[in-house]
Length: 254
Image (cartoon, rainbow, N blue to C red; front, side, top):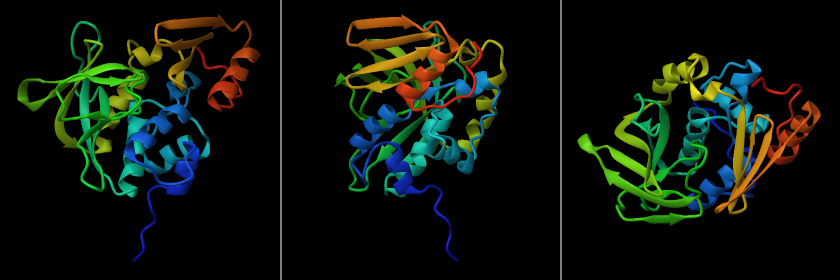
């Protein structure tokens, strides 16, 4: 029996601006430059599905983005099709005071086809590393996104820090994408979820980032930051299309 491939590799690679298979490092950066981190579905009243066909339709065919469960969930399938070994792991996001609940975030531990790695790959955290981080390195890892460090925590967990600030704690137990479905639903529906605070869409842009947060178009590069307030719905919709390739009929509700 011949089984259908879970993703069309060629179409996915074209979606992230690549003509063919590439090293993990290049795939990781290209994904973040082409596919935005965004929570627009929540503010457009669209249900978020983690079914493979729905993820492919949203990200590859309709050229949208998503948040961690969608982006890392789909990126894992691409990497596996390209011969990488991928472990999906849960992470607890640090809110500035403490770590959140299990399954708060989905990250990927990746070994390359030639045995290179293991790497921490994450294309779904918003501001994060442009390139994969070495999972077994405990010194500083300098990246265009900042200086990262991985630190051992209790129970075999691993903390990820950016410029000395905790980002999240990885729990090393292998998980299936379906394990994240309840938390994905909770992130969409809990009134206090930070994903419900307002629409956000962001991607890598050169060595910096471009973000549309509500009506603010923000560009950051190193320590430099500029903001432009978009006054009309027409300007907001045009910005989504121009900067993120996302065509919407209505402005996401804030």
